[in-house]
Image (cartoon, rainbow, N blue to C red; front, side, top):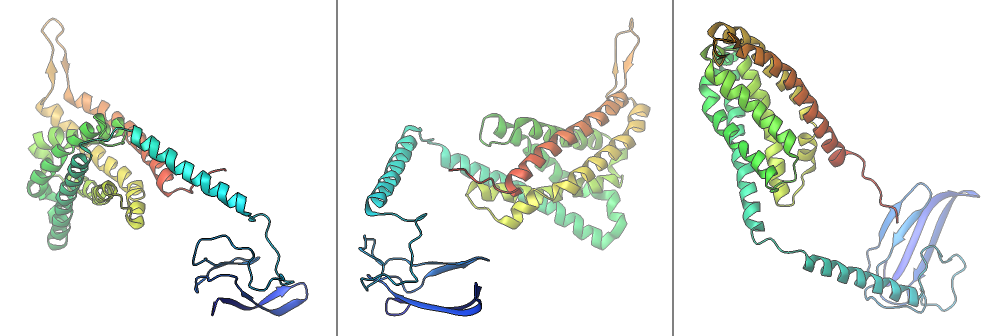
Amino acid sequence: ITDNVLYFKAQGHGAKGDNIYEFQIEFLEPVEPKPLYKVTQRQLNITVQKKESSWWERLTRQEKRPLFLAPDFDRWLDESDAEMELREKEEEKMNKMKIESRVPKDPFKHLKKGYLIMYNLVQFLGFSWIFVNMTVRLFILGKDSFYDTFHTIADMMYFCQTLALMEILNSLIGLVRSPLIPAVIQVFGRNFILFVVLGSLEEMQSKAVVFFIFYFWSIIELFRYPYYMLSCIGIEWKPLTWLRYTSWIPLYPLGCLAEAVCIVQSIPIFSETGKFSLALPNPLNVTIQFSFLLQVYLIALFLGLFVNFRHLYKQRRKHLGPKKRKMK
């Protein structure tokens, strides 16, 4: 657009074959010099913005309409229609303000947001330390790093997994919208492996499977906690969103498999030592072996995997699936 005149020239294929199409329109009132346009397979849409929002008597400076120019009645608005549309928008805005004014403001909103940001930040830093430490040791020591993972990483893992109990509380009191059951399954499942199986058996602490359990846990959290932290301040980074709702597809089954191997390896040790087994009174003369409970837990482990898998699949479809168009 130059001197308030739109100049157009293009080559296109029409009823008479390939031709050069060109025209120019001098507008009635001043317009913005940079129009917006969109090219489709069937047409070219050009949007010209008025410099001042006002009603025009006609489009062009010349009183007689050019022969090539025709109105699109699907988009046609006369002055009364425009006023009605503006009035509807103002009413909609007022109604929205009234609804918002009726909703009581939470005086602790900023405090809650600050707490959630700090919680997710601390967990991210903790699991990042675990992941980096284990990766560096793997490159330096190779397979030898598998067997002393627990003794070098356990303290930080204890801290992170103990702090993870807050996720259950956050869901329970409504600080976050995450459902309670998947949070309970994940937190208590991990803590059972960490504190009961690994923490109570020195024989298990030098097993190679400990490396894989800790490694899969930490990789998952490298994407989960920063995603939640940015969500608290209204920021969505699409690559991180994709990683958050895609990385679990291989990592959750692998983590579950590593936990199952850990349980299977611990069963003979618990059977031999009788640790945590419960002996009932003499008349019954029955002992409930903890190793039997671990076999039952194996079944519950894969049921829990199914529940979390189903929940995460729904979340993935919600965040990464095709957006539904609203019908007017």
